[in-house]
Image (cartoon, rainbow, N blue to C red; front, side, top):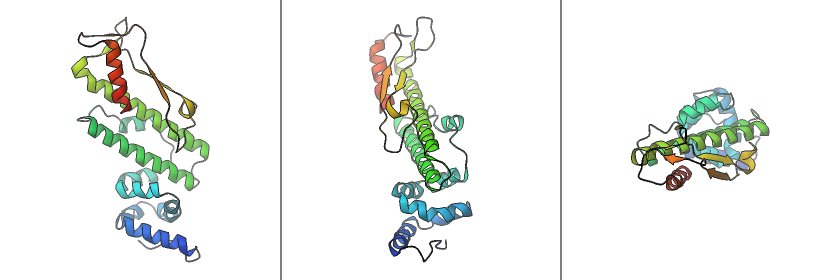
Length: 213
């Protein structure tokens, strides 16, 4: 891939871009093949965000495909990509979560740094990403515990969910890149286990621990 950095830029920036191109190697060619617009914007974004460079290095094809899509995050498609119930176990589920999180955070950073999205859109996208990841984690935890403990139900027989309340910036849908996620976890009054073998309080404690992990 030809070096798109102008010779008019400061020497420090050009040296930094040279280090990035050496780090990424032939992955830059795969990135450049996707869209000329991406190639033009890459030096500026890469120079601003080492996190972005790291994600591009680890997940070249996945991130490139997402950058070609100019639309804001979509809850339905994100939930589909974060469906962890078919994962073989906790390690695979964590791998999927980690990859989707990194790719989408790098994409959000790209959109903001290139002017494709304003700060308000970035906050909304980061909040939606966190919300969907939390939902996926809880769904995986429920499916992982069910073979051993069964399920919790309400007095009318409907499923008794783990209730996750978002506090702080996530609660206000204003999550930023450095925000912690503050959650309160509850379960419904009157919930009971559908099968004997574990107390409902202990079940929800284990469910919460697995979802958090």
